[in-house]
Structures are given as C-alpha cells and as structure tokens.
Image (cartoon, rainbow, N blue to C red; front, side, top):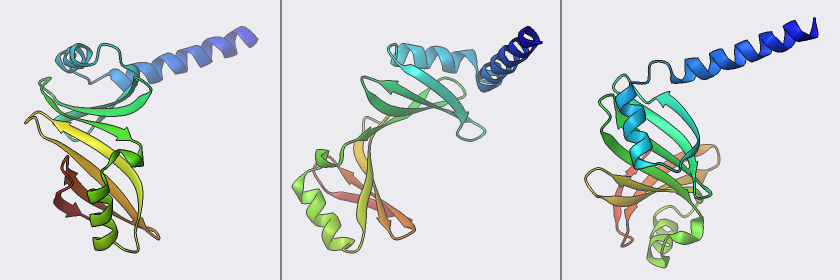
Length: 143
C-alpha cells in the first residue's frame, strides 16, 4: 500500500511538472536558456495568449522575463531593494504621493534597451504604480 501511495504521489508530481511546461513552445524555452543560462527555479506561466512569463532566481535575485510565443524577448523585471533608487526619485515620490509607502521596486529592462524602475506604492489597501527612469524622472503613473 505504501509503494502504491508513493508511486501515485510521484505520478501526480510528474504530471504537474509536465502540465507546467506543456504548451510552452520549444523556441521560447531555448531563447530563455540562451538569455539566462544560470537561471534556477524557473516557473512558466502564460502572460496572455501570445506571451509567456518565466519567474526564476538568478544571482540571489528574483526575476521575471517575458517572451513572445516566437521566442522573442520582451522584457525582464528584477526585484531590487528600496535603497537602490536615488534621492531625487524618493523626494519626488514623497512629494507627489505623501500618504503612500514604497512597497516594492522592480527594475525593468526591455528589448528597446530602455531601463526604468516600476515602483509599487501602497496607500492602505490601494496599490498604485509609478515608473521612473534611471535619472529619477517620472515616466508615467498607473493605478
């Protein structure tokens, strides 16, 4: 009975691994492996019908990369510590959003070679997002 239970658990586990990667085009998987050869703990999901998102660990950081279903890299997001943003950005955020607290910062790099920071602000139960470039200039705000 114990052997049967262990086999059943192993079978269910292998199905969940297969289900997680089934539907992932080989070209996407290969593009990811070329761009992030040292990635660990990779978990795939469908961003939408045309895009796939990989959440993974790399150099002790949590990252997210998005690829088209043709294997083209769209962008990478890296969760970074709050002190990474410059003083001008913090001052601007405190002035524009005085009752909000910074809860998360993600450094975004995209295929257009743009780098910016998506800053998640929390005001009670409400979340708001604001983007700043590397020089501390606000790009746009999203609710």
